Image (cartoon, rainbow, N blue to C red):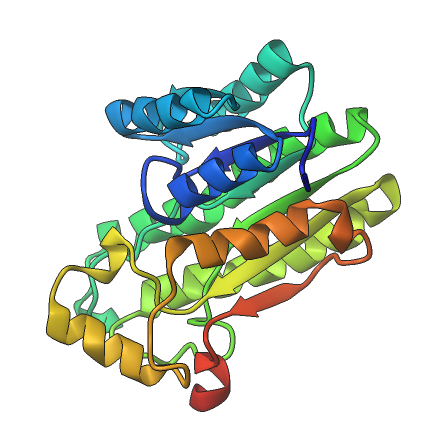
Length: 251
């Protein structure tokens, strides 16, 4: 079991990639601390894990609130004795459109959720991992803003995710010598609520990928599992593409 005995925080854990990751990590032996805004859905995921003899607790909150990141770490330490890793997965796309027509509130909301929340998470999580002698922190990025930031209407989203890559690399450099690894997964199109429910739109997105399909949430979660596990012990500062080849097509 890849994560046996480790305690992992997962944000955005009420659905999609986050929920899939919580279930996968628990099945691999982790104690999981789940965070998201929707308490009822979080409780459902916790119940699924505990019914399978896994260990999970949750705390509802908003990742744009700095105190929430600290509260999740406190819960991990109180419930399971410490923190070994985190999958900071919560994020939004926001409203799409050209920058000259974009409301400032939308820009600020996207950056707060996707980038500033990562700053809050790192501030709270890294010291807790260093107390344990090391750990692994994983963010969810995207190919948008990395291999191709020029997709129409996605200026705020691309900027936030490009910033996340820079933050990841700086954090990795700062904390590698103390045993904390920091990486980012870059998913392609994934079958989550963020992809919408229009079949034609999903078919279009699938067709952009050389593999001609979108990812299942569990496939993205498996890449985070690798980065959190000891199999990735020499991997830090990396943007890991898990995108069905879409990045190479769009370069």
